[in-house]
Length: 204
Image (cartoon, rainbow, N blue to C red; front, side, top):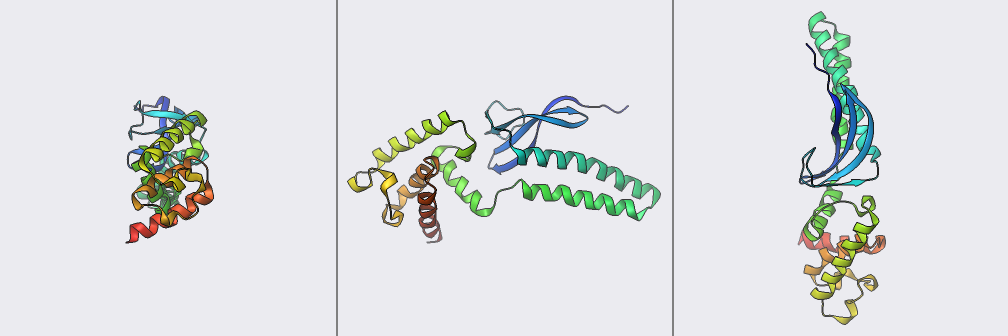
């Protein structure tokens, strides 16, 4: 007897870095019907408690639908192709699996993004894009980073990190912290300049 799953489930894993990822909670009736909410999960578990709510992530929703609604019909088509020796069903099944495999690229991070997120993991403790985090959490993290900056640096001209124009002149051990400050402080131009300095440092 076929058992149909009914309930809710966390699926649509995207932007995975280490054990962290974005996942979306769906209503499931055999297949995902509609999304309820998205979460940033810190422990790699679909149902783990180390997660917090973020705005509904459209990439996660799209990936969830594609992986479920395409993969199961693809398996069915391949089974039919094998049973009836019908080439056309086999081709359609293989095409479906190709679409599913593509979603893992769609839901992944580029090499550059992965490196940048690893810097955030190292400094902040998690690699989430601040743009998806609750504003109060962003402000709290930014305040802690600024406090750490003040404690780590005694050079007066660098006390206000927003005023730095030449990241290459900053001590190398402070660049990851400065990059995190720029990202969480939404200083896009500064974050890009600091990242260039970090890349040069990583290449040395």
